[in-house]
Image (cartoon, rainbow, N blue to C red):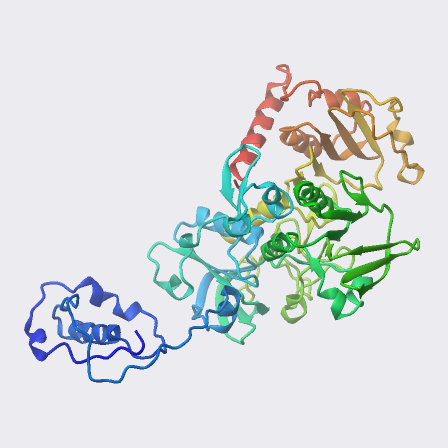
Length: 591
């Protein structure tokens, strides 16, 4: 303690005591970190314990020790407590010089990857380096379940209720699950260490080396890049000046949720820019909150549910005036709010590409890789990159291909992968992050599996989707309650260029049904409305890649009139395969 008087408390007689075995206190002294602090009596005790350890003598019990001495007492100094993020970025962290498995990116894909690595190699030592100041966590609840919690302290607890009714935490694992980076080498049975608030700026496959933002270097055998993406802004807001930007949030991270949860308690109005899943989910969630707070919620896009909606609206410019952000739309209207939330998708985080010689897909973005999630370099040689939900790229090249270059893989949001069924794709959903992360991890641990999975997605809005659900594709819907305009559509006449916009009355009851997304006579995607647990069957249909003349027959497989799917007993082989797919999906669902 600072300012406490002291006097010597031990004499040489303590060194005459013999030990039969080393004390526990003395055995761990070498592992204690060193701190630059003022004087403390505890330092005397630790110093003595260190001396006793060298001479193989017992450390005396200091419980009844007096700490008074003739030193003049100083007034206590004011202590400044730093936030977690500032500590993470200012305090040096001792990193291992070498790891067998290195994962760049601490999102969902990275988490799924190290789980797969540890599953295949129980003694594996995995180092994860992430830019965020948090351990791996789930992103979907940030725009859904957390907003429906009745806990007023939810921003600190981060506990939410799942569809099953069980509560769980946003983080995949507790902090105690991970080991310290400087102790990773010493773990007897392997482990996982997550270094937060740090950035890898370059990976050199020829030297098996990663370079961090402080120019420190780490050697590795195998590397996964799962850097995910960063939230996209729109140029009209981005170029509007600092006053506007102070009142704008690009929503993506847990820190954004905490910030917004606090702000809406004092705000009168908020505008959500974006009509995709994230923007619509967040709008619905804030509208739910607004029922009790009186918050005015405006969305620049889709349908309303207690929300002011501006469909087909683009922002012309933005300015800050009289304490409000003023958005001028291209149709001449203006919208004002205390705060603006931008949710218009992400850009794959590929900054590391140019320095590391990785090929970036010029059309859809992301690290370009093959069906086994192996990344490509500028000279077209394959390496492994992996995506995370979070998303990412993993690094793995088979040693038989090259003894000079390190294996590299990709996975997650930042991965442009080759789908053997539908060609080159890049997907930005949680399920895809889980599956590609797992596959990259398995391939890093020695497997050579291609990507064959069709990821599903499903916000908390009563529908799920799988495959390619692109609005430019022709669609055919089959519902339990037919819509008056839903006559049978001949697929061979349904070209994308001939599609005309048709919006049935929103008062019609769609009940339950399935919408098929088509390429000629092949199904490439499906959307289920109020139908659940059908994804494994849909995944099997996409895998078969067959042509269909009558989609009503295909719809019967999903039993849209029943609550649970059934499979005809006439095809036991297909039923068995579907059951296997169901088991595989349930096994890798987190939470």
